[in-house]
Image (cartoon, rainbow, N blue to C red; front, side, top):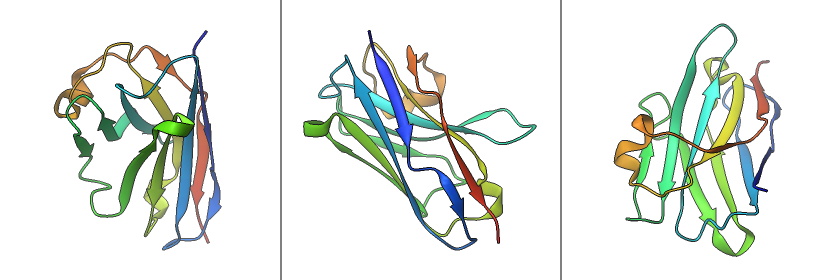
Length: 126
């Protein structure tokens, strides 16, 4: 059984930083793509970052480009999302998602994801 577990959320002041972790159990990330999504209150789900071992690609939404960095540690089967210069508009529940079949991040926002975590809340507020 595949389990996806996000952690690292919390309360952050505007301009601050936070690192989220996504650990996957029961499914190796060695050759996988993995993506971060978020959903703010009253809004739809937004894809924000992807990393793929298929072609080494990464992808970022315009809203986070230059502020967020995605990385992976295959030895720990974990993906990270380093978030810097956080804005109140970044407040959301952040989810990690993994597809059964890997793909390039160039199509990340058009692809289905098979495994999702429960999400971790990030609140940016003073």
